[in-house]
Image 1 (cartoon, helix red, strand yellow):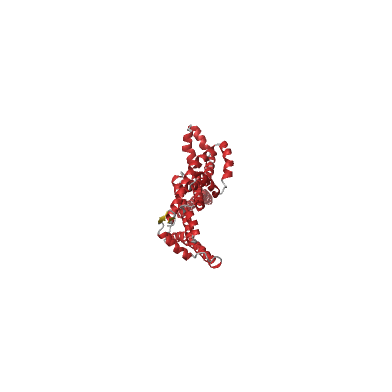
Image 2: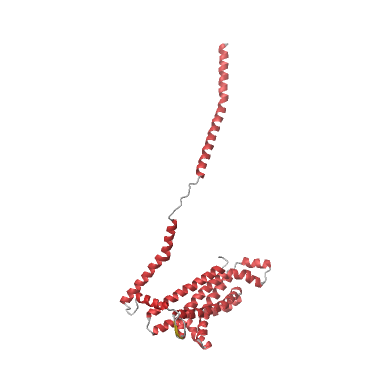
Length: 320
């Protein structure tokens, strides 16, 4: 009996052990999963921590050096290169060409009194530039006032475009000086003739760019105008003009640059007062140093006119 009882107890013990084994396994798995979850959370917490950003104390200095290099150093090297070539030409093939030092001295003399006036044909370079700029602005404004509406008509109407395109293609490549005799014949005066030449040569960029701007207007804009039942005046004011304004201003900028180049050649032939006549008069006086100074002045005035147009474009363009 004792042995049997012992066997039963052993059997029961074995069964108990067998029954408790899955429970212990589940507990261990739970502990392992919990440990993995804790480890993953700790790892993600470590990953989410961003290190403190370091401040580069030399960044402003580096930015200043970069700007100085682009604005002063590189252009300065270019000017030195041009002066070296100028000096080389003067010492080798053109000994009559004034040196850079002589030209600088003449420039100081000219700029020392730019607005002197000793007679109707003897004025300082300041007056000459002012007269030329006045003629340029007059012809340029006239070209803009006529060119913008014509460009709108060409861009909006295929019939008008077919009528004007042949005339534009014929007249646009004509040299400015070819128009000067026509202007003198019509107006019989220097100023109106010069303004006419500027007008007839600077109007084409305005017309072409305005027409291109009108053609590039998205069709959705016009569909919206039809849905809103806008009048033709409202369409022109609220859709056409804002959408084409960047093209118009680009054409005006090209027109102004063309006008400034044209006036110098026109004034050389017409005489009177102006930077072109000043250059021709100094050539007759064999003052090449004054001519070089005048060339630099023409370039600086051109930069000023371009800067003015860029400022106007930023003020008026809806995209800015």
